[in-house]
Amino acid sequence: MRFILGLMTLITVIGISSMAHAQAASNDRYCLQGRGWGFPGNCQFATRQQCLVAASGTNAHCGLNPRYAAHRRT
Image 1 (cartoon, rainbow, N blue to C red):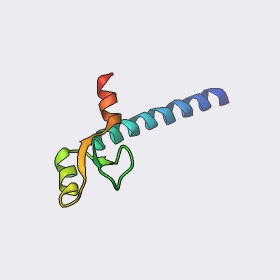
Image 2: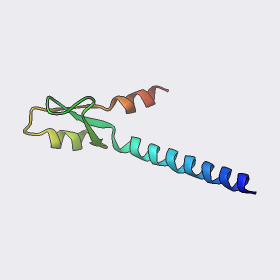
Image 3: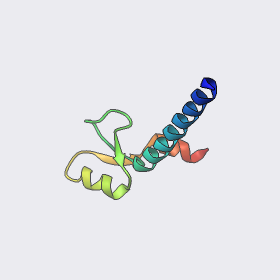
């Protein structure tokens, strides 16, 4: 009985984790990139327009998040 309960808990945790990862992946498609940022940059932008607004007036640019781009290839 404990084994089954533990297994169900593990499956639930894995399911929640994968859903959270999928949600996070859709919110970080674009990265603010430039000298002030490490690689891949500040990847908190869901749209390119959001990233461009944040980059406005700075010496930064926007690029596709490499994690998102790699995920799209598979």
